[in-house]
Length: 375
Image (cartoon, rainbow, N blue to C red; front, side, top):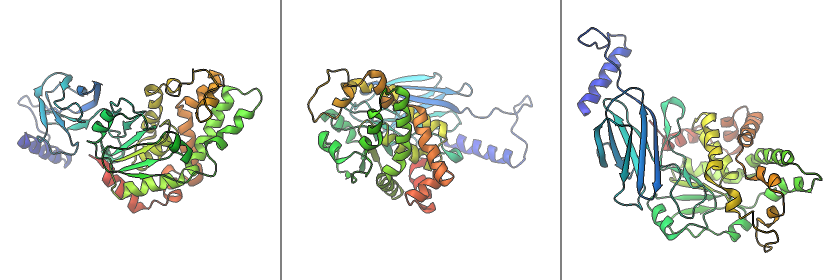
């Protein structure tokens, strides 16, 4: 296999330099090696994986399971060699271990993927930001950056699973009151938890005024959410600055989270992916994924009777009509687009905003990409 790869690389180099392409015995140019068009991994049950892929042309593939996505080829568990199909089901020998899967078409480039959404019993919207395409043919590395909602519901089995991820930093965007109401008892190994002073304009101040409006409509709430996302860029400046500092310094894996895992975390994730050169359509795709993953009405028990205890942060929402509350619960693409537009409005580009507002230097952007991207 190694000799074949070297041969293919040499032939590609010769062709690029203007030499005659290799030809078959019939005088036709030899076809290029097959490449993966898509690769997806699902874990429908803990420890049972489904790996699916498509190729740009038919070719046999090799499939390998790894516990470290950066491990050398051949160092993992070989699932298939010279396999002609387009999907594989694989029962993992250790269900509490997270696995990554490398698929290599014969003679072509390999790609690695894992499950995006972690299979946790008590997690909320806990997922990996790896696998997204970035500038220059690079990809966001798997197993380096996670985004999540509140972690207070994580179970012992969840912590066994998370313990294998080696998370070094937890960047908690919540207010002091939120942390007190739903505390995180992290037991998945040593990790530095970063918390921040409450912003001068918290969520209640930014969104609360709209609920005093007579004849409130869902459109009013959606407009308020759009303004909230624009303000979040500055409201969370201390937290986002710390996030970029940690990642530029190579402190990975890092988990970024708030309460719902979609608003403050969604803006932070969008800024980070922008800094890594991920195209905006993919950034939006990641953001709106929350709508598909979480039933926030159920998570927050909003269909229960109003009048819950005073320390319940969701009691106020239960007293409102569902149509009024729904815009608060959605991950509407227009929300994250508003945040990115605001960044461009202030500094010409999202990257320019990140550099200016969060004090991220060109060297730190280069370090971020060095730590978090791969080919």
